[in-house]
Every structure is written in structure tokens, then in C-alpha cells.
Amino acid sequence: MDRLDNTIRPYAWGSTTAIPKLLGVEPSGEPQAEMWMGAHPGAPSRTARGTLVEVIEAAPERELGDKAVAKFGPRLPFLLKILAAGAPSPSRCTPTWSRPRRVTPTRSAGASPWTPRTATTRTPTTSPN
Image (cartoon, rainbow, N blue to C red):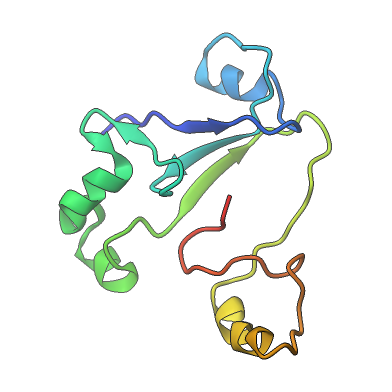
């Protein structure tokens, strides 16, 4: 088992105290809106053995298990975000992967039944942020 060091996203709507309190550290006074725990390529958790991306890539079956690799491939199939709002935040809905995959060809043809506000995920793993 590895201890994770996770990325904190400093969005303006974030609380200045909630995540530091959760982690048992002194607040910096800056907003801390999201703590990401996972293997997102833009902000993977870090371990003593390297980033979570590197650790999983080195031995996916050992780290994730054979069944998870068979079902999702050699990557962590989720990203856990702990949210800490200190002010109203922009809201959005991320649809399931089956919906964007189903409607993206229609969108490419120019007859989109949805807008970027209602469907933003284009990859099977994680949203852009």
C-alpha cells in the first residue's frame, strides 16, 4: 500500500480551510477547491515509487488486478475528486461515456442534439478538468 500525495486545484470558488482541515495542515489562505486522487495524466497522485500513472504502467495487473485490467485496460478507471466550495461554483454535468460516443458522430455532421454545456466528456476515462 502506498501513501498518496495528491494535487490540489486552486480554483477561485474553493474554500480556504476545508481541505487543509481534512489534511491536518495549516491553511495557506488561498482557495483550494478540489483534491484529485488518481491517475489523471494532468495531475496524477504521487507515491514514493513515482506518480500513480508510472506505478500502474510499470505493472498494471499487480497494481489494479487482472479483472480490472481486463475490463478497463491498464489504467485506473476513475478519478476521485474531493470538492470544497467556499463560494458558488460553476455547475456542470458530465454524461456517461456511452452518451458522448453515441452522439459525437451526429455532432460531427453538424446536427447536434446537445451543446458543450450538456456534454463535455470526449474520452472514456476522465473529463478535461
